Every structure is written in C-alpha cells, then in structure tokens.
Image (cartoon, rainbow, N blue to C red; front, side, top):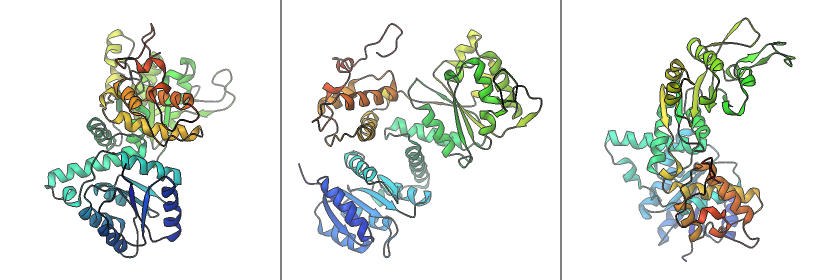
Length: 423
C-alpha cells in the first residue's frame, strides 16, 4: 500500500507541530509549510499529494488561494480548510473550491483525525478551480445552490453524498426559505425526519430562534394537549403552577411535531385553530396568546388514507400539506450506507473506548450494502453499535461476524416478526 502524503499548511508553529505529530502517529507522511507560498513550493516538488490541510487566514496567501494553486499541480488532491475566523461565506467558498470539509478553531484532534479519514476515503473527485467556475451563469447558480445546501445539510447532521441525498438537501433548503409555510416531512420510520426538520430551521430566516421538538406518539392523549398549548395553575389535578406550552416556547422559531398522524381528534381541532389564527389558549385559561411559529410536521403514516378512514381531519390535512417533502429510505441512497456506517463507527467506537483503524472488512461492507434496512438509518446505527460491542477485544476492523446473525443471510434480508418489524 502506498504511503499517504499530507501537506499541512499553517502559520502557527504549535498547530503544525501538534497536528503533524498526531497524523504521523496514524501512519501518514507529513509535509509542513508555514505559509501559502511555501506550500505551493513544496507541492511543486512532490510527485503526488493525497491531502492538503490548510489554514484559511495566512500572511501571504489565504487558504482558498493555496487550494487554487495546488490543484493546478495536483488536480485529484483532497483538501480540508481549517480556520479560527470561520464564516458561512468562507466555508461555502471553500466547499465550492472542492474542500471536503471546513473546520473551525479551536477543534478537537479526534474530530480532525476522523475527518481526514473520511476525506481520504471519499470517492468524489475534488473539482479544479476551472471546473468549479468555468460554467454558464445558469449552471453556476445551480452548482452554488447545491454546494450551499450540502454545507447546511452537513452542519445540521444530514450526512450523505448520493444524488438522492443532494436532491433532498436542496428541497429542504428551498422549503426553508418561506418564513411561515408549514413543511410536512413524509417517509418511513427511521429516515431522519428530526435531522431534516433541524435543517429546515437552520436554513430559514428563523435560525436565530428556538427549535422545539415534540413526539406526538410518545405522549398520552391526556398530556399532549397540555404539552402543546400549556396550562394555567389548577387547570386540572396536579397543575400546581402555570406552564407555557411548546407553541409558546417556540415563539420566533420552529416547532417540530413528529408523528403528527397520531394526535387525537380533540387536539387536531385545537392545532388547526392555532395554525389558522396564530394564537393559542392555555388549558384552564381565558386569554389568547399570540404565537409566531413556523411548523414542521412529520409522519410515517399515509395521512390521506387516515382522512379517508375518518381518523384525521381534512381541513387540518390541507393546513399541513403545504410544502410536502419526501425522505428517501436508506436502501434508495446507494453509497450513503457506507458513509453513514463509517460516521457511526467513529462515534460509537470512541464512546466505547475502542478504535477500529481498519474500518470495515470487505465482507462487512458487502453485508451492509446487501441489507435492505427496513428500519433505515436507525437500524444501521443499531447494527454498528451491536458490532462494536460484540467485536473481539483484539479486532482492528469490523467484520461481518460481529453483526447480528440475521443480517448476514444470503440475500441480506432482515428476519421479521409477525408484526412486520425487523427482529
């Protein structure tokens, strides 16, 4: 296996020394440069570079100028931009120029190590400057919009690089631009609806306001109404003091109602009024309270069928179904399976005091790619946690033998119970 060469560019000697030593301990060959011009000189002397880690703000050239020059010498090099002066604009600019990620100082060394590993494993070639900008005005706008969307998605926890995921990120960012229009997230259980809701919030004009989440299925009917709208003192047995509801707590921001298809009929009526009038009344109260809330709702149920069955109000359905966004199942996201698996492995292994420098063995990757994942991202995360716990003490990589037995069947299909849930 060829030695991996990393060019580390920063005008801070201590950072170069510490980060260089950490990466050398992981087996990388490190070349250090104390400024942009020194980086270009050393890059020119190298026959091959695998990765550039560059500071953004330096005395002579900034990090983006360094990337520009180095890519002309090494078109396929991967890159990370590190800065103590991070702004959304400079982060987006770095991503446009092909940087795999943008990390702000101060940073956690383990975070950088994990990001380096992901960048080197990425199969997506980093575009040259000419490829990024030598486009027509229309396609340039599309490229910039997609890059902005993926940057926001990454920061919100929506990981993935497949065309399906890119399309989802673009749709969520478009949906976020309205200040009040309700977004309805549709899709199977475990597809990451709360992460998607957070992305809508972070990309919206309300990002400085609160993000408040409620799982409608997790609360009994008797408590859900109080949780949403609040109550006054002595409104019911046990109400020893007044309490604001989630609508009030989300004022100026975003309220996320998960599993909205499970709310009872009476609460549906009150929710409809809150959306129509932009005001609520606490249980036991007589005064209305104005609320400025953007609602994001989610369900894995067929709400239209629920309307036909008489369990969900038609008028509420139309109030919710303003900007519907479908979240794809994990089996539809191709290479995202391994990207997510590696991200889960890094985090869960660290939480359990383990290290798997070899990542996944070939048979483990094959098992993951063949599995249908009816439980979607949540199921994948559970598989990785199971594998980390069950891995032999001396294991340096996750093998298929460490997965739950039903995962490694010949067709990669889950064993299901009579209820239809994954076993």
